[in-house]
Image (cartoon, rainbow over all chains, first blue to last red; front, top):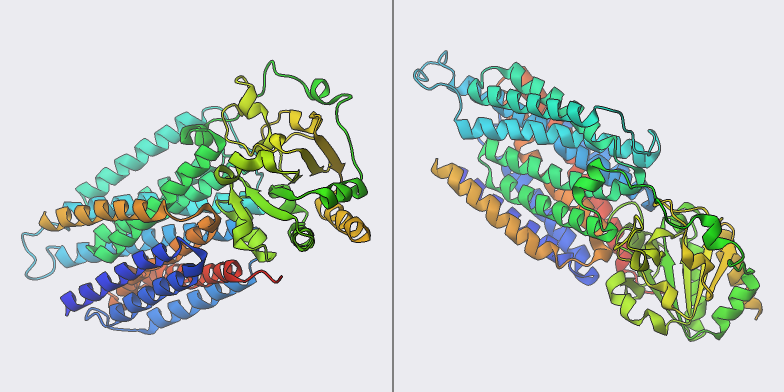
Length: 471
Length: 95
């Protein structure tokens, strides 16, 4: 019976892998997701046939509560709040691993304790299981509390500034050592359940302290990293239960999160340690905003921009998080389709770190019915951006700052950017000349081929649209 | 010991499979990838069900029960919200 269950688990794992593979293209993605869901259903149903299960009440109640909450979250959530939801889900994965590993530790100490007849001579569970239990508790608790802090920051419940205090690193190091020590004592004496829960407690504090210093704009990296941790916690739980489907799935998710973390770091040209522990150095010695902007910034009216669009053949739109803040995605998509109807070729250039999580901007644009084919990655569009008649920047700043290319002393030096300054005309919709996250002025705004359209993103796009319809 | 080696083998090989597949997923679909991987990491539900159902002690049954709730939120919420996003990408342009 056990081998039959394990075979079905293998089928489930294969379905998960096929499901992930479906995500390599939007055409196959929906089916891929369904394959994954089928795999999960299969794994759950077959687990219910396990001979150890004596009562179904708690299981059914738990599944019902979880399913209702999950379904409500999934259907009610706004697409702009997607990062919060994923942060929350990461955390839930982490806490589930902590609880399951804790329960398994208690069960195995009971099973192998000398007090049970026939168990004399066996002293506690195998060491590999206790090591995995400690790992599961540690990673899971860090993930849970780290994710809650990330959720709070994204939601604006706690300051999304970097919270730093002196001695922070030392405190973290002490806590990490303490957690390690408690982990060793769990391994040495698995019957001491208190050591496990102390480990979870210390790891919880560590999870909070590790996430609190990370600034709001770096949240995409942290959310991706916590995604990876939640997978690793599941894999560790797999070792605790000697359950291969957990190990396989956990390592798939762990790998996925790691790749996304890496992509995000590359998109900002910063190392992971710099994101987690460092703060961007203030730009010392570089030009001040006045030097860059005074007398050079040209401001335009929506009507003038409409004329530009009317004469253009190719247009590229570069959205940033500011677009989402002013809810301009729908008007923007309407503007693009009006232009397309007039024979203008419109494309969107999406920077890897635009938005609050990997791929966030694409989801927001897809919600506004922007066709998938029009969404281009930075690396794909940069080679031919000089053929663009108009580049429209909306709500983006640092990711189009040419200083990244030209000024080696700039804090964003070397960061990959979308080379909009090479387009014939650049139109920037922005409320003011205030700097982006990097805190430095952007010479693009003062360039000869740039026009500033000062105002709220949504209103400005609607004004251009109205002016365009009059021409 | 053999079981441990087998587990580590599976772990390492799966990470490689993960790297191979996930590097092929276009950046446009990275958000659905994250919510989708949330959903499948809810596989911890399997372990939670066993603890909640075996009921060795009141404590383990309670821990298992709470874990069932959290893992189910991940599974149901994760797959549903991923589906919702992917349907938006599938929609044909209304031109």
